[in-house]
Length: 217
Image (cartoon, rainbow, N blue to C red; front, side, top):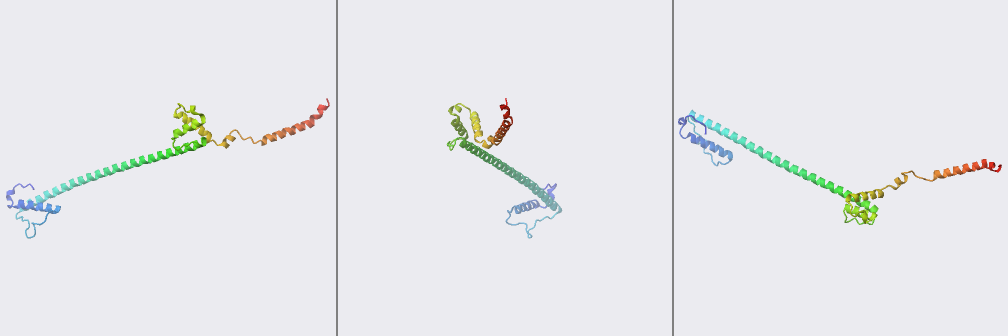
């Protein structure tokens, strides 16, 4: 209720009437009022200037209260929205992290599948009869090296050593035969045959030219 320096100047019952009027306004705003006691037939009575001033002050106080409640409600709503936004952002981060982990796992699966495929392909070139279906990549390398060099080649050896021996065999198996052939040049025999013919011709000419010298001595 508004501050009134001298309520004794008010018409008796005005304070209660104004309080009921304001409460009725609140109920109407909240949808609670079922009947209006302040109809045209029964209006709020403010007989004196003091009554009017009191009513104006009461309505100003009520408006200030409503404004304060609206501001507080807005703050709460904004806080709720911020909390929801933070929750959504957290969910999005979790989804992004899960997606990244899934993509990493997929990439790792593809990498391992590709590696296994290459190991099996190389192993079949070196040891065509080796059954690789139930062997890991390390086991495949071990079996290949053992099959080529014997059990002593893998007994007590580290996997790194076995991998190195396998890679050596892989280089041999994957070597380009034509590249190995031309590495030091291809000997076709054509030039050698020509050289032999040239030498034979030169020997014949020399024999015809110098043969008489041997008979004159």
